[in-house]
Length: 148
Image 1 (tube, rainbow, N blue to C red):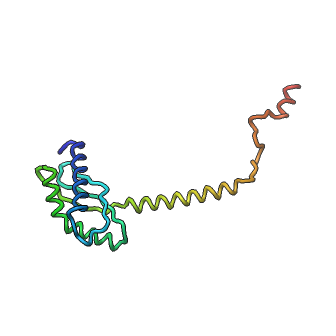
Image 2 (cartoon, one colour):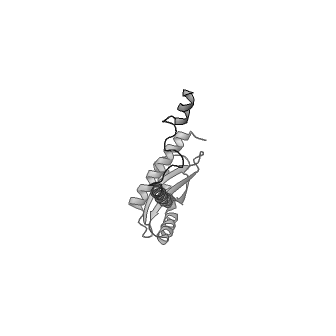
Image 3 (cartoon, rainbow, N blue to C red):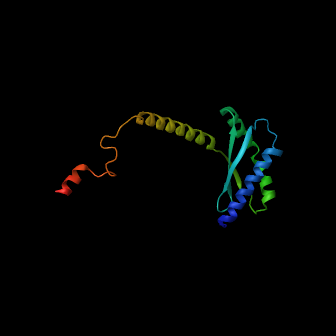
């Protein structure tokens, strides 16, 4: 087991290496517009998970996933060379759902804004059920009882 800070540094280094490899060295035509969003490594430095997003249709996402799987060995050997750790971690590529989650949150926020606008429209011209401000002005009944 290694220190958590060292594991995080190695994961960050793996993320940069993979992103650079995809940008410069991997020339697979199936590889679409891939962005490496995160990398995580286990505490024993044996397994690394690389999270990525792909801009495009589901077919392009599947093609990019296949291209990453086929380039996994080349990327792993480069990770081993550049990190210098004794055992090169095995790599797993996982499609990151950040874009879909962000889009879903945006849709929920739009619905909430519309609902707030509807409530505000219904509230215009509405009057309180009781007195408009029962706490600021003393009641006349109370003043009459105090005088007696």
